[in-house]
Length: 354
Image: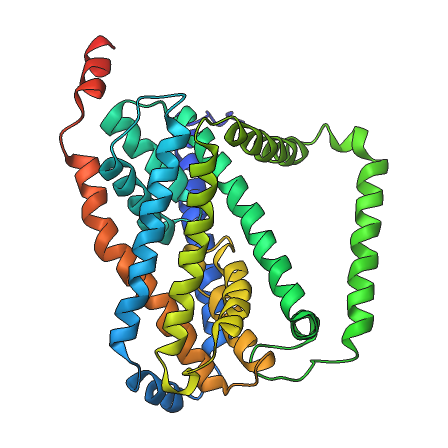
Protein backbone atom coordinates (compact mmCIF):
# COMPACT_ATOMS: atom_id res chain seq x y z
CA UNK A 1 0.00 0.00 0.00
CA UNK A 2 1.62 3.29 -1.05
CA UNK A 3 2.47 5.71 1.72
CA UNK A 4 0.76 9.06 1.38
CA UNK A 5 3.39 11.75 1.01
CA UNK A 6 3.24 14.85 3.16
CA UNK A 7 2.10 17.80 1.15
CA UNK A 8 4.54 20.68 1.68
CA UNK A 9 1.64 23.07 1.40
CA UNK A 10 -0.27 21.48 4.27
CA UNK A 11 1.29 23.58 7.10
CA UNK A 12 0.50 26.73 5.15
CA UNK A 13 -3.08 25.60 4.64
CA UNK A 14 -3.41 24.84 8.35
CA UNK A 15 -2.02 28.26 9.30
CA UNK A 16 -4.38 29.95 6.87
CA UNK A 17 -7.29 28.02 8.35
CA UNK A 18 -6.27 29.07 11.87
CA UNK A 19 -6.12 32.73 10.81
CA UNK A 20 -9.53 32.41 9.17
CA UNK A 21 -11.00 30.88 12.33
CA UNK A 22 -9.43 33.61 14.48
CA UNK A 23 -11.41 36.15 12.48
CA UNK A 24 -14.57 34.16 11.79
CA UNK A 25 -15.26 32.73 15.25
CA UNK A 26 -15.25 36.05 17.15
CA UNK A 27 -17.29 37.60 14.33
CA UNK A 28 -19.87 34.80 14.54
CA UNK A 29 -19.91 35.11 18.34
CA UNK A 30 -20.50 38.87 18.12
CA UNK A 31 -23.26 38.41 15.52
CA UNK A 32 -24.89 35.66 17.57
CA UNK A 33 -24.80 37.67 20.80
CA UNK A 34 -26.10 40.78 19.08
CA UNK A 35 -28.95 38.81 17.48
CA UNK A 36 -29.84 37.20 20.81
CA UNK A 37 -29.94 40.54 22.61
CA UNK A 38 -31.92 42.40 19.93
CA UNK A 39 -34.18 39.73 18.43
CA UNK A 40 -37.16 40.25 20.76
CA UNK A 41 -37.05 44.04 20.91
CA UNK A 42 -40.14 46.08 19.94
CA UNK A 43 -38.45 47.66 16.95
CA UNK A 44 -41.17 50.18 16.04
CA UNK A 45 -40.79 51.67 19.55
CA UNK A 46 -36.98 51.54 19.33
CA UNK A 47 -37.01 53.37 16.00
CA UNK A 48 -39.46 55.93 17.37
CA UNK A 49 -37.13 56.63 20.30
CA UNK A 50 -34.13 56.99 17.97
CA UNK A 51 -36.08 59.40 15.77
CA UNK A 52 -36.45 61.75 18.74
CA UNK A 53 -32.71 61.79 19.54
CA UNK A 54 -31.01 65.15 19.98
CA UNK A 55 -28.22 64.81 17.43
CA UNK A 56 -26.57 67.95 18.70
CA UNK A 57 -25.95 66.20 22.02
CA UNK A 58 -24.80 63.06 20.20
CA UNK A 59 -22.18 65.10 18.35
CA UNK A 60 -21.25 66.86 21.59
CA UNK A 61 -20.67 63.46 23.24
CA UNK A 62 -17.95 62.79 20.67
CA UNK A 63 -15.89 65.76 21.88
CA UNK A 64 -14.80 64.13 25.18
CA UNK A 65 -14.21 60.94 23.20
CA UNK A 66 -11.73 62.83 21.00
CA UNK A 67 -10.04 64.26 24.11
CA UNK A 68 -9.78 60.72 25.54
CA UNK A 69 -8.12 59.43 22.36
CA UNK A 70 -5.66 62.32 22.34
CA UNK A 71 -4.88 61.72 26.01
CA UNK A 72 -4.31 58.03 25.29
CA UNK A 73 -1.93 58.96 22.46
CA UNK A 74 0.03 61.32 24.71
CA UNK A 75 0.15 58.73 27.50
CA UNK A 76 1.58 56.21 25.05
CA UNK A 77 4.27 58.71 24.07
CA UNK A 78 5.27 58.96 27.73
CA UNK A 79 5.58 55.19 27.90
CA UNK A 80 7.68 55.00 24.75
CA UNK A 81 10.04 57.85 25.61
CA UNK A 82 12.43 55.86 27.88
CA UNK A 83 12.70 52.85 25.54
CA UNK A 84 12.35 54.07 21.94
CA UNK A 85 12.42 57.11 19.63
CA UNK A 86 9.45 59.18 20.74
CA UNK A 87 6.83 59.54 18.00
CA UNK A 88 5.03 62.80 17.44
CA UNK A 89 1.58 63.24 18.94
CA UNK A 90 0.10 62.99 15.45
CA UNK A 91 1.83 59.65 14.80
CA UNK A 92 0.83 58.25 18.18
CA UNK A 93 -2.76 59.45 17.77
CA UNK A 94 -2.98 57.98 14.26
CA UNK A 95 -1.72 54.60 15.52
CA UNK A 96 -4.22 54.59 18.40
CA UNK A 97 -7.14 55.36 16.08
CA UNK A 98 -5.96 52.76 13.57
CA UNK A 99 -5.99 50.24 16.40
CA UNK A 100 -9.65 50.97 17.11
CA UNK A 101 -10.47 50.30 13.47
CA UNK A 102 -8.53 47.01 13.58
CA UNK A 103 -10.48 45.89 16.66
CA UNK A 104 -13.64 45.92 14.56
CA UNK A 105 -12.10 43.24 12.33
CA UNK A 106 -10.45 41.10 15.01
CA UNK A 107 -10.78 41.47 18.80
CA UNK A 108 -7.63 42.73 20.55
CA UNK A 109 -5.87 43.04 17.18
CA UNK A 110 -5.70 46.79 17.61
CA UNK A 111 -2.77 46.63 20.01
CA UNK A 112 -0.65 44.68 17.54
CA UNK A 113 -1.76 46.76 14.55
CA UNK A 114 -0.96 50.08 16.16
CA UNK A 115 2.48 48.83 17.23
CA UNK A 116 3.15 47.43 13.76
CA UNK A 117 2.15 50.67 12.06
CA UNK A 118 4.33 52.68 14.42
CA UNK A 119 7.21 50.31 13.67
CA UNK A 120 6.80 51.02 9.98
CA UNK A 121 6.56 54.76 10.53
CA UNK A 122 9.26 55.22 13.18
CA UNK A 123 11.23 51.99 13.22
CA UNK A 124 10.25 51.20 16.83
CA UNK A 125 10.48 47.46 17.52
CA UNK A 126 7.02 45.93 17.82
CA UNK A 127 7.89 43.95 20.94
CA UNK A 128 9.08 47.15 22.66
CA UNK A 129 5.98 49.19 21.89
CA UNK A 130 3.75 46.19 22.65
CA UNK A 131 5.25 46.04 26.12
CA UNK A 132 4.23 49.64 26.73
CA UNK A 133 0.70 48.86 25.54
CA UNK A 134 0.51 46.04 28.09
CA UNK A 135 1.50 48.56 30.76
CA UNK A 136 -1.23 50.91 29.56
CA UNK A 137 -3.85 48.16 29.72
CA UNK A 138 -2.71 47.26 33.23
CA UNK A 139 -3.50 50.75 34.45
CA UNK A 140 -6.78 50.78 32.54
CA UNK A 141 -7.80 47.62 34.38
CA UNK A 142 -6.92 49.25 37.70
CA UNK A 143 -8.99 52.35 36.81
CA UNK A 144 -11.97 50.23 35.72
CA UNK A 145 -11.86 48.33 38.99
CA UNK A 146 -11.62 51.60 40.91
CA UNK A 147 -14.63 53.00 39.03
CA UNK A 148 -16.56 49.82 39.76
CA UNK A 149 -15.72 50.09 43.44
CA UNK A 150 -16.85 53.73 43.44
CA UNK A 151 -20.13 52.82 41.77
CA UNK A 152 -20.73 50.07 44.34
CA UNK A 153 -20.02 52.46 47.20
CA UNK A 154 -22.40 55.10 45.84
CA UNK A 155 -25.30 52.74 45.09
CA UNK A 156 -24.39 49.36 46.53
CA UNK A 157 -27.91 47.94 46.77
CA UNK A 158 -28.84 48.75 43.17
CA UNK A 159 -25.70 47.29 41.64
CA UNK A 160 -25.79 44.19 43.84
CA UNK A 161 -29.36 43.47 42.80
CA UNK A 162 -28.44 44.09 39.17
CA UNK A 163 -25.54 41.64 39.06
CA UNK A 164 -27.59 39.03 40.92
CA UNK A 165 -30.39 39.35 38.37
CA UNK A 166 -27.93 38.86 35.51
CA UNK A 167 -27.31 35.34 36.76
CA UNK A 168 -30.87 34.31 36.03
CA UNK A 169 -32.47 36.92 33.81
CA UNK A 170 -32.14 38.12 30.24
CA UNK A 171 -31.69 41.84 29.70
CA UNK A 172 -35.01 43.62 29.60
CA UNK A 173 -37.21 40.93 31.15
CA UNK A 174 -36.78 42.11 34.72
CA UNK A 175 -37.62 38.61 35.96
CA UNK A 176 -35.30 35.76 36.98
CA UNK A 177 -35.22 32.82 34.61
CA UNK A 178 -35.70 30.31 37.41
CA UNK A 179 -35.21 29.90 41.14
CA UNK A 180 -33.63 32.33 43.59
CA UNK A 181 -30.64 34.36 42.60
CA UNK A 182 -29.12 34.12 46.04
CA UNK A 183 -28.75 30.35 45.73
CA UNK A 184 -27.24 30.68 42.27
CA UNK A 185 -24.80 33.30 43.50
CA UNK A 186 -23.70 31.09 46.38
CA UNK A 187 -23.38 28.11 44.03
CA UNK A 188 -21.26 30.12 41.58
CA UNK A 189 -19.05 31.39 44.42
CA UNK A 190 -18.64 27.85 45.77
CA UNK A 191 -17.73 26.46 42.37
CA UNK A 192 -15.24 29.27 41.80
CA UNK A 193 -13.59 28.69 45.16
CA UNK A 194 -13.49 24.95 44.52
CA UNK A 195 -11.83 25.45 41.15
CA UNK A 196 -9.22 27.75 42.69
CA UNK A 197 -8.41 25.20 45.39
CA UNK A 198 -8.23 22.41 42.79
CA UNK A 199 -5.94 24.48 40.58
CA UNK A 200 -3.67 25.22 43.54
CA UNK A 201 -3.44 21.55 44.54
CA UNK A 202 -2.62 20.56 40.94
CA UNK A 203 -0.31 23.52 40.24
CA UNK A 204 2.71 21.27 39.58
CA UNK A 205 0.87 19.36 36.87
CA UNK A 206 -0.84 22.44 35.47
CA UNK A 207 2.52 24.17 35.09
CA UNK A 208 3.32 21.72 32.29
CA UNK A 209 0.34 22.81 30.21
CA UNK A 210 0.82 25.49 27.52
CA UNK A 211 -2.34 27.32 28.65
CA UNK A 212 -0.98 27.66 32.19
CA UNK A 213 2.17 29.24 30.83
CA UNK A 214 0.17 31.74 28.78
CA UNK A 215 -1.95 32.73 31.77
CA UNK A 216 1.12 33.08 33.99
CA UNK A 217 2.85 35.14 31.30
CA UNK A 218 -0.17 37.41 30.97
CA UNK A 219 -0.32 37.99 34.74
CA UNK A 220 3.42 38.63 34.85
CA UNK A 221 3.07 41.13 32.01
CA UNK A 222 0.30 42.89 33.92
CA UNK A 223 2.45 43.26 37.04
CA UNK A 224 5.52 44.25 35.03
CA UNK A 225 3.51 46.87 33.19
CA UNK A 226 2.27 48.41 36.42
CA UNK A 227 5.76 48.54 37.89
CA UNK A 228 7.32 49.97 34.72
CA UNK A 229 4.81 52.81 34.61
CA UNK A 230 5.66 53.70 38.19
CA UNK A 231 9.29 54.22 37.11
CA UNK A 232 8.39 56.94 34.63
CA UNK A 233 9.84 60.38 35.20
CA UNK A 234 6.49 61.96 34.36
CA UNK A 235 4.47 59.77 36.72
CA UNK A 236 2.17 62.64 37.62
CA UNK A 237 1.35 63.39 34.00
CA UNK A 238 0.82 59.69 33.30
CA UNK A 239 -1.67 59.34 36.15
CA UNK A 240 -3.49 62.56 35.21
CA UNK A 241 -3.83 61.38 31.61
CA UNK A 242 -5.11 57.97 32.75
CA UNK A 243 -7.80 59.56 34.91
CA UNK A 244 -8.63 62.01 32.11
CA UNK A 245 -9.16 59.18 29.64
CA UNK A 246 -11.73 57.43 31.81
CA UNK A 247 -13.38 60.67 32.92
CA UNK A 248 -13.91 61.56 29.25
CA UNK A 249 -15.30 58.11 28.50
CA UNK A 250 -17.79 58.57 31.32
CA UNK A 251 -18.72 62.10 30.25
CA UNK A 252 -19.25 60.98 26.66
CA UNK A 253 -21.58 58.18 27.73
CA UNK A 254 -23.57 60.39 30.06
CA UNK A 255 -24.09 63.08 27.40
CA UNK A 256 -25.24 60.45 24.92
CA UNK A 257 -27.75 59.11 27.44
CA UNK A 258 -29.16 62.62 27.78
CA UNK A 259 -29.61 62.79 23.99
CA UNK A 260 -32.82 60.74 24.19
CA UNK A 261 -35.85 62.66 25.55
CA UNK A 262 -36.94 59.69 27.64
CA UNK A 263 -33.59 59.69 29.46
CA UNK A 264 -33.26 63.47 29.78
CA UNK A 265 -32.28 64.33 33.33
CA UNK A 266 -31.00 60.86 34.14
CA UNK A 267 -28.26 62.52 36.17
CA UNK A 268 -24.51 62.08 36.59
CA UNK A 269 -24.78 59.31 39.20
CA UNK A 270 -26.99 57.14 37.02
CA UNK A 271 -24.67 57.95 34.13
CA UNK A 272 -21.77 56.61 36.16
CA UNK A 273 -23.65 53.39 36.93
CA UNK A 274 -24.55 52.76 33.31
CA UNK A 275 -21.03 53.62 32.19
CA UNK A 276 -19.67 51.08 34.69
CA UNK A 277 -21.80 48.16 33.53
CA UNK A 278 -21.31 49.11 29.87
CA UNK A 279 -17.52 49.12 30.26
CA UNK A 280 -17.57 45.41 31.06
CA UNK A 281 -19.46 44.78 27.84
CA UNK A 282 -16.84 46.67 25.83
CA UNK A 283 -13.95 44.55 27.12
CA UNK A 284 -15.57 41.31 25.91
CA UNK A 285 -13.41 39.51 23.29
CA UNK A 286 -15.71 40.17 20.33
CA UNK A 287 -15.49 42.68 17.51
CA UNK A 288 -16.04 46.16 18.90
CA UNK A 289 -17.87 44.81 21.96
CA UNK A 290 -21.01 44.34 19.85
CA UNK A 291 -23.55 42.19 21.66
CA UNK A 292 -22.16 42.27 25.21
CA UNK A 293 -22.23 46.10 25.31
CA UNK A 294 -25.86 46.26 24.19
CA UNK A 295 -26.78 43.55 26.67
CA UNK A 296 -25.16 45.37 29.62
CA UNK A 297 -26.63 48.80 28.75
CA UNK A 298 -30.14 47.43 28.24
CA UNK A 299 -29.90 45.38 31.41
CA UNK A 300 -28.58 48.32 33.40
CA UNK A 301 -31.25 50.78 32.30
CA UNK A 302 -34.15 48.35 32.62
CA UNK A 303 -33.20 46.44 35.76
CA UNK A 304 -31.43 49.14 37.77
CA UNK A 305 -33.55 52.18 36.88
CA UNK A 306 -36.69 50.62 35.40
CA UNK A 307 -36.63 52.32 31.99
CA UNK A 308 -38.56 50.79 29.10
CA UNK A 309 -36.76 48.14 27.07
CA UNK A 310 -37.26 50.02 23.79
CA UNK A 311 -35.78 53.23 25.20
CA UNK A 312 -32.87 51.33 26.75
CA UNK A 313 -32.12 49.55 23.48
CA UNK A 314 -32.29 52.82 21.54
CA UNK A 315 -29.78 54.33 23.97
CA UNK A 316 -27.40 51.37 23.67
CA UNK A 317 -27.50 51.45 19.87
CA UNK A 318 -27.07 55.23 19.76
CA UNK A 319 -24.07 55.19 22.11
CA UNK A 320 -22.32 52.26 20.46
CA UNK A 321 -22.90 53.11 16.81
CA UNK A 322 -22.01 56.79 17.20
CA UNK A 323 -18.70 55.84 18.84
CA UNK A 324 -17.98 53.19 16.19
CA UNK A 325 -18.78 55.56 13.32
CA UNK A 326 -16.54 58.22 14.87
CA UNK A 327 -13.66 55.75 15.22
CA UNK A 328 -14.01 54.54 11.61
CA UNK A 329 -14.39 57.97 10.03
CA UNK A 330 -11.38 59.30 11.91
CA UNK A 331 -9.31 56.11 12.11
CA UNK A 332 -9.55 54.74 8.56
CA UNK A 333 -7.69 57.60 6.84
CA UNK A 334 -5.13 57.71 9.66
CA UNK A 335 -4.55 53.97 9.24
CA UNK A 336 -3.97 54.52 5.52
CA UNK A 337 -1.57 57.40 6.29
CA UNK A 338 0.59 55.21 8.52
CA UNK A 339 0.36 52.15 6.28
CA UNK A 340 1.09 53.80 2.95
CA UNK A 341 2.56 57.20 3.82
CA UNK A 342 6.21 58.11 3.77
CA UNK A 343 8.30 56.64 6.54
CA UNK A 344 10.18 58.76 9.04
CA UNK A 345 13.89 59.16 8.29
CA UNK A 346 14.74 57.01 11.35
CA UNK A 347 12.79 54.08 9.91
CA UNK A 348 14.28 54.67 6.47
CA UNK A 349 17.80 54.54 7.91
CA UNK A 350 17.06 51.32 9.79
CA UNK A 351 15.64 49.73 6.65
CA UNK A 352 18.70 50.77 4.63
CA UNK A 353 21.05 49.26 7.24
CA UNK A 354 19.22 45.93 7.13
